[in-house]
Amino acid sequence: MEQFIFPAVFFQEEGEADYTVVFPDLNIFTDGKTLVEAFLFAKDYLKVYCSYAKKYEIEIPSPSKFVNIAERFPKAICMLVDAYVPNA
Picture 1 (tube, rainbow, N blue to C red):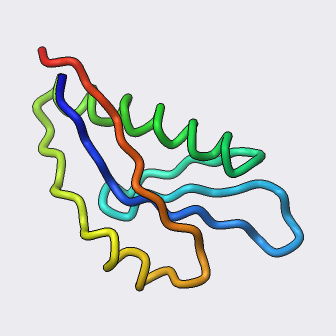
Picture 2 (cartoon, rainbow, N blue to C red; picture 1 turned 90 degrees about the horizontal axis):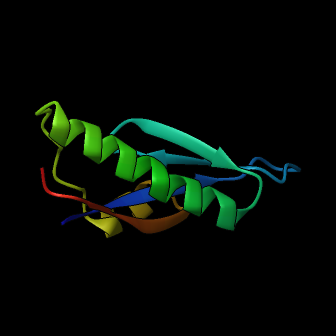
């Protein structure tokens, strides 16, 4: 198995309960009704993204440093999200 870890940014619009999740390095998005649900969906989405990228031999970029992402989005919640992808 191969592990991928990317920083993710969790946005919550003022007055809204839902969270939008962005992986800035991969330019992919997902969302969830709660922070926990958004995190779990992000984990699943990262796994699917990396699995298909490996399957179709698409280069997966190196992740940015967490601190750089957190500094770019100071009003959002930033977390590291990991995914384990089976080797082909």
